[in-house]
Length: 109
Image: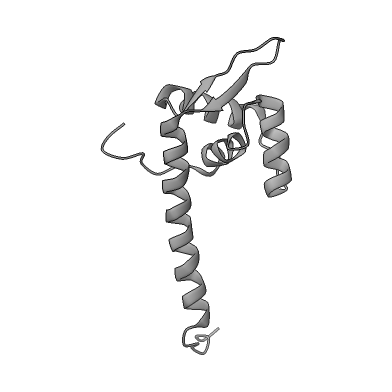
């Protein structure tokens, strides 16, 4: 990647957030994302995000004793999560500030 982690798409960030609790296999990641957001990612979305994260070095395959492959965060993956959460926090702060700001009348219909 270039000088920074770049901008993450939502499914990729959700996979990283799921792995903050420790190693998980794909099905467990999908279940956790469903609990977090109310929406379960499809296999293409989930494994596409996992593949991008593996390629970027933000996650690695964890040791497996069964047929399911668990994944875990790397140090750089954790740093990316911290960065992305800081960006999202700033966006939320600005959104809340704007909600409290001056209200204007709606324009003509």
